[in-house]
Structure formats: structure tokens, C-alpha cells
Length: 321
Ligand code: ADP
Ligand code: TRP
Image 1 (cartoon, rainbow, N blue to C red):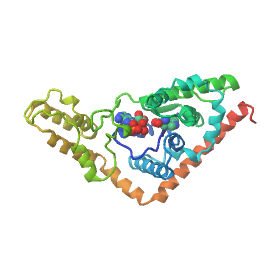
Image 2: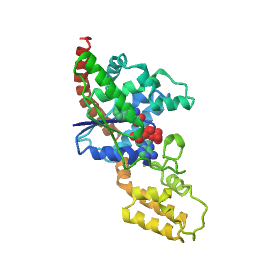
Image 3: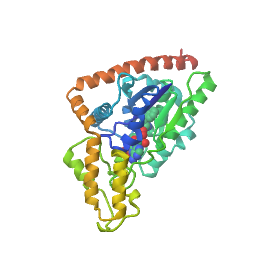
Image 4: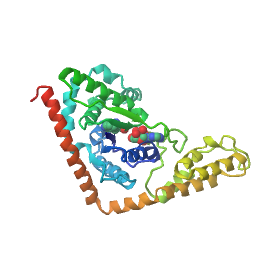
């Protein structure tokens, strides 16, 4: 069973990315042959600073490796190191109805936000379909927001198989149900675009300040808080602290006499501990950037072998060869 997923290089990863995407992806490494890549071609639809793209790509690689990506079993690479994926994108493009892409929520959301779309933004799901199909992927773990794109990939594969004969494996999306949305500093879903993130790694002082700045209500310390389970700090605590510790804090809030300041301090300590080993690994990796580059290149070499085989299949089937 081949598992494949990609992540855009949009800067340092945050707790939402970790619990919503990385942690399940790291778990899946044990269940099949996982292919994970950094979607730097996709980032071209919305990021236009070359140095930033390079830097963000490196940050994501470091974050992923530090958090436990096992390179002895998982193929980890940069999307653009397998340029075959862009040729397959073109082949798939002419089998993709405009209407299918016009219906994509993520495209429609961007239009609604007033973004002037470039063709890349519109064609984004076709490149994603190519990413998925070129590695004969069976399972694609993604966040809810990306489910529709995986379904588009499946539709395109069906269309191709009907038109040119059995060529592609049909992929299935896999959505993580229990980590629907990690809340950010202001209680909305944690997201870079809302500026409410807590990064996995970074400067201790700055991160402490962020957590101490979590938005709480103005009830007094003494007042009991029967809605403690909805408190952002409690929700985050449940992710980074042992279950009984989180429950204990929830009870303290519920009974009253326990202040938000104390709660935030405790949250910071648990969060900081939770990633302490990963933080050490990241430091080591940062001092061995050649090793990181080597990992990505080895990954690309393996991925490319498969991509070339599948692309050849598609070229033959469609009469290019
Ligand atoms: P952002 O919203 O910060 O731009 P992305 O859209 O790049 O994050 O998300 C990358 C991955 O992390 C996706 O699989 C997405 O579903 C997951 N993710 C991002 N934010 C959260 C969150 N707050 N809770 C759960 N999962 C999240
Ligand atoms: N579009 C995905 C995101 O923004 C990233 C991505 C690109 C991807 N290609 C993919 C995810 C292929 C899964 C499979 O999160």
C-alpha cells in the first residue's frame, strides 16, 4: 500500500500542522510505504520570492525530519526534484473539464477573498492529481480542506483510464477525524493566514510570550468556569500534556480559584517539554545541512524512478510514444 502526501513550503510549521497533519502522517509511516514531499511547485501559485521559497522549503524539511520522519522507510523529497510530474500535469490537463476545477472550494474561496487568480491557482488541482497519480498512490492523508482535490485526482484518473485504457491506480483520501481543528491564539482555527499560530520550533522567549498572550475572558480568578472544556489553553493542553494532567487543569478551572495566568504558564511548560527531543534533533540537523540535502536527494531519486515508469505508461497509453 502506498501512502502519499504533500505539504506546501509556507514557512515554519505550527501546532495545527503538527497535530492535524504531521502526527498522523508520521504514524502512517508504520502502515505502508509512505511518500511525503514538499510541494514547492504548488507554492509558486501564491509565493513570488525565490529566497523565501528556498528558505521555507528548508524549514519544512527540518521540521518534518526533527519531528520523527523516518528516512529509512519513508521517501521524503522536494516536488520539483521530480520534474516528470509537470509533464504528466499537461497530459492530464486536456482530460480535465473546466467545470471540475471551477467547482473547487479552495479556488472559489480564494476568488471570494478577492485574490486575482493566476492560471496556476486555477490549475492547482491538476498538478496535485499528477502528484498523486504519478506514484501509483493508494491512500492520500490530507486535511478536510484538501479532500475535494483528492476526489478531483480520482475523477481525472477514471477519465484517463476510460479514454486511454487502464493506466492509473485510483487514490482514496484519508481524513483524520479526531484532530478536526487545533485552535489558535484567538480561538479561531490555527492558521498562518489568521496570524494566530504557535510554532513547533522557535525562540523560547517569543513563544512563551505568544502563549501568555492567549486570549481569555475577563472572569475573575475565583469564579468557577463550568465551560472549562472550551477554554483554548485546556484544548491545547490536551494535545501536549498527559490526559490526566489536562483533566486536572480542567477541573481546577471548573471549580474556580485558579487563574488563567497559572494555566498558561503550565501550558507553556508542557508544550516546551513535548517538543524537547525534536528540538534537539532539529539543532543537530541545522548543523548538518548537507545531510538534510542528501536525504532529499536520495528521496527524489527513489521517487523519480517510479515517476518515470508511470509517466511512460501514460505516454504510451495516450499515443505520445
Ligand atoms: P495554514 O492554514 O497555516 O496555511 P496549511 O493550509 O498549509 O496551514 O495546512 C497544512 C496541513 O496542516 C493541512 O493538512 C491542514 O489540514 C493541516 N492544518 C493546518 N492548520 C490546522 C489546524 N488548525 N488544525 C488541524 N489541522 C491543521
Ligand atoms: N495542496 C496540498 C495542501 O495545500 C499540498 C499538496 C500538493 C498535496 N500536492 C499534494 C497533498 C498531493 C496531498 C497529495 O495542503
